[in-house]
Length: 217
Image (tube, rainbow, N blue to C red; front, side, top):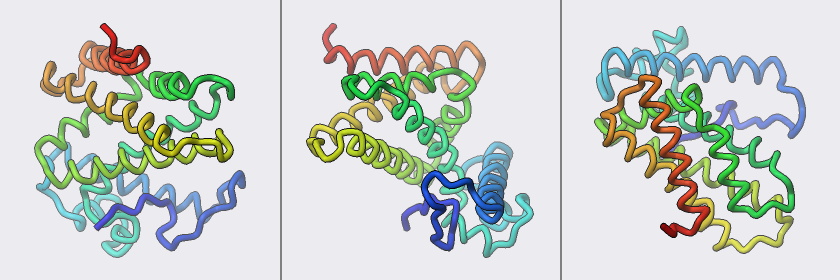
């Protein structure tokens, strides 16, 4: 079953650019509450050791409401990754229109590379190492974010995009970011202290720098 990353489980999508309605804001609040409860439980019980019913109870919603938003506790956790990666898009859109795509992508990602932004993503990346189900939903979150960035690039190029080039570029950028997270985990064992998160920030910058420079030494 694929994760449905939507703030509206009934499929209604607010008009682009329109201010969210009260109903939409309520849905977003419910989604956030469920995701936060899943995070609280994974920290206290560990991956795979709690149920959707427990998440729903902690969030103060019904079991049915939980499943309107997420297919499993692991998918509720993965949405934190998606929310982090979604922040790439505004930074990408803010880049100069004539800037090379590689540079725009790298600047958009490195703009998020500060410890405050990275902490939860790093924590979940470490937790997923212990749980294949979490790994699957986390990978889906990355893939979903990649598709959004591909769509943003295609919009920027206004029909002039080379599909293979765009897919290769975005895939390489996101793979470099995941490589940095893997290296950080191997070096630090998942330590979330300030020094460790600062090292993760530098690893992300270095990995994306390799890509910018064509992996030349």
